[in-house]
Amino acid sequence: MSALPPSFVPQDDLGTLCLGLAQRAKAAARALATVATAAKNQWLLAAADALEAHQDELLAANARDVAAAPGFGLNAAAIDRLTLNPKRIKAAAEGLRQVTALPDPVGEVREATQRPNGLQILKVGVPLGVVFFIYESRPNVTADAAALCVKSGNAVILRGGKEAIHSNTVLHRLLSAELARCGLPADAVQLVPTTDRQAVGHLLAMSEFIDLAIPRGGKSLIQRVASEARMPVIKHFDGVCHVFVDAAADLKVAERIVVNAKCQRPGTCNAAECLLVHAAVADEFLPVVGASLVAKGVELRGCEQTRRRLPGAKHAADDDYRTEYLDLILSIKVVADLDEAVRHIETFGSHHTDAIVTRDINSARLFTQRVDSAAVMVNASTRFNDGFELGLGAEIGISTDRFHARGPCGLRELTTYKFIVTGDGHVRE
Image (cartoon, rainbow, N blue to C red; front, side, top):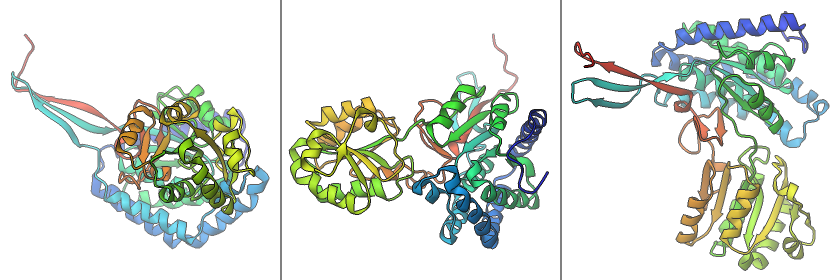
C-alpha cells in the first residue's frame, strides 16, 4: 500500500482491511485496559514533543490539504477548521500535555458501600473498549481523540475526512510511533487508510469488535452513522445555538457576547446561529449590534420587526431559524417575552447550547429551568460549551443525547463501570 492510500479499494479488499483494523483494535483495547496511568501519561508527553519536533512536516502535509480544499467545496470557515499553523500545532501539543494532568477514570472507585451482611460493593470505572471515531476536516481533532481514548483505556479507529488525509496520515504516524516507544500497543490508535466512504459502512457493522461510534461533523454524516451503526452512538445532529437578549440585559455586555458567540469561530458547533431580542430593547439594541456584526462580515437575516430596525437584513424564513450555518450568517427574531424566546428555542433549536443575557435573576432562573439543552449559559457566550473551557479537559465531541453522555464528552464519558463484590464465603440463602 502506498504511503498515501488510494481513495478507492475493491470491496473484497476493503472488507478485509476494515476487519483487520477492528480485530487489531480489539486486541489493543484488551492490553490497554490494564496499562498504568504513568505509562499513558508518558506517551502523551512524548506525542506532544513529536508534534512540535515535526512541525515542518505537518505544515507541509497540511498545505497539500488546504490547496485541495476548494475542489472539495469547502467554504472559508471549513478551510479555517482544516488549516494548521505553528500556533495550532503548539496548541494541539499543549492539549496532549494537559490531558496528563486529568484524573484517570480507569479504576476510579465511584461508589463504595457495605451491605448489612458484610458484602463489600465497589462501583469502578472501566474503559468502553474500542471507539470508532468519524470526523470531518479538523486535523487537530486527530490528536485530541487519540489522547482521550488512550488515557481512558480505549483503542480508537480514526476515520478523518478526505479533505485532511495528508495531515491525518502524518499525525497518525507520529502518534502511533510514540505508542510503540512507550511500550503501549501501537494498534491502540489506528487510522482508516483509505478515503473510500464504504469503509465507514463496513466498520459500523462490526459490533462484535467496536463498542462505540462517535461521529463529529455535518448533519448528513451523523444521520448516516446513527442509521447504520450496530453499536451505540454518541452524537449531536446540529448546533443551532441561540442567544436571547432579555429586557433586563446590560446591552453593552449583550453586544460583546453576541459578537463573540457568532464571530469568534463561526465554523464551530457552539457558535451562535440565532439571536433573539426582547421587544422592549429591540429599538435600542438591534441597530448597535447589527452594525457591529456587519462590520465583522456577518450576513443578517431577520423577521419583519428585525428588518424594520435593520433595513439591510434579509428576510428570515422558518428554514433559516432551523439552519446551522457554520458561517458568518445570523438569523434574528424579535420576541415579546421570555416565554416566546423559550418556545422559539424549543421549536427551532437543537438542544446544544443556548444563552440568556440578563440582569434579572428570576429571568435567568426560568431560562435555565425551561431550556432543555446540553448547556445553558447565563451572561456568557455559547462558545464556552467546550471541554477545556468548562474545566473538563479535551473533548471528543459534544453530545445532545441524554444517554450515555450529555454535553462535552471527555475522559469520564469514555468509560463505563463495573461492580466488584467482595465477600467472605458469603452464600445467598
